[in-house]
Length: 174
Ligand code: S3P
Image (cartoon, rainbow, N blue to C red; front, side, top):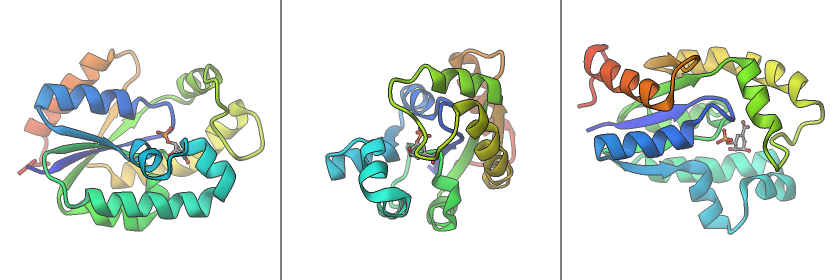
């Protein structure tokens, strides 16, 4: 069976949803950020700070290439995964892409609560989210086989919607 790749902005809940779906569907679960942390021994924000976004993106590409050999796996990606066409191409053939779309104000609220500053870019969270998400949203949408808007839904409801649409939409897992 194909992999299910979760894409979306920071704070959209890709990792929590990934763990949940993997239990529901009896799939393996990988989180590209976590994999990178395991390989480098550094937290993602430390990798970003110490080596910069270009090096971060190249580490991410290596992890994605490795994961491309998987099957029956839920893969939670980092928010910037789609900035790199190679990442999308590496997983395209044996994966279904699911975009977790969350309204800007919900993302802003979630990111403001984080202990670690989520952006390396200068500026307030309230300004950066609409700017960066506005730029990335069309790419997430173009890349996605399924887009779910998580507004007013619990994680369980969104997961049920994803599972239902994997069965009914024209995006076969096999
Ligand atoms: C990033 C999102 C982060 C992480 C890194 C870069 C981004 O992942 O990969 O800090 O550019 O949006 P999450 O979306 O899992 O927080």
